[in-house]
Length: 448
Ligand code: TRP
Image (cartoon, rainbow, N blue to C red; front, top):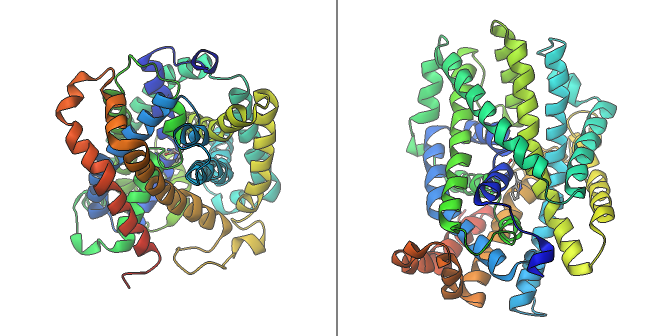
């Protein structure tokens, strides 16, 4: 089975694909607005602590299970506890992949639309843009098609090769933008908001948001790392790989904030503008720079590419599940899953003003700043499902499969791990499920 499922060609290939999954709209679009909504510096600090203390050790657990059993989330659980109800944790992951893709693809479509807007030198008009029903639906469909085309061809060398060139270019572009924005008049206030922690702003809600963002950004909680881990060779060091992935993912997110907050304060805008933040502030920034629209074109092309390596991974989970478990043909199931995702995502695409019904979809408790369908999907799948999935998977890996077996898997290719093995086992069995559980309880208002 291992042979027919394939392996990453190298450790770099795996790190690139997994970092490509992790780095995406979550870093550039979601991270800054979640920071803005949750009060700035204290949230950033809490986020970093969650990445190191929970995200990273949890990522190791998913990778270990995937590499050990070499299957998708459902198949992996089935291999360890055949026929048990634990399989539902795997199904939840598959469902969450579709759920996230259904709204993530909409926003990825906007980034493609903005490449065109930059080309014609148009910085404003975000409101009209996202409320144009045909345009947003077309861009969403287009993005899903490109994603499906790549997943259709299996694990693509093209994407690995492209990422190797485009990711460094993206990185250099971000550094250039940081230098530009921190020298703007009024930038200092933005840096203070972003980097100086005000601990009075930490509440249960911000803790949930920080943990949710950490899981979302690292692509955790839905078995993606199980799936990608299943293609890793036994010789590779999973621990150093995970450290690289988490490091680069966090670095890119922090860098996005270093661009956006100085720019925001310099332009006198509110940091709590929510999901539209990046599409309004960045274009205005480009418009104000000499030669800015060329930078803008590059920026949105690279952001689209970053989003693409993430949508590929989101589609890969349900596809791997169907291929492994139901022995269906990869080439046709890719298009079926993409089509179903399109139907599920259509209300999200139309929820930014195109359809009044979905734009004011207020049937959930007023926990979100805006009641549109896309925000609800983002909350249900991007926050809650990932947290809940991570809770189930950490209990499954720590207790049912066994932390010792997971640790033994991690030691393959990483002999030095023996030193920290005990600490990791305690974390995955006790600390991680407990913290996730408390934060989930808080979500339902248990602590008032
Ligand atoms: N991590 C990606 C981002 O930050 C989004 C993503 C891709 C994801 N695959 C995932 C999130 C799997 C959770 C699980 O943009």
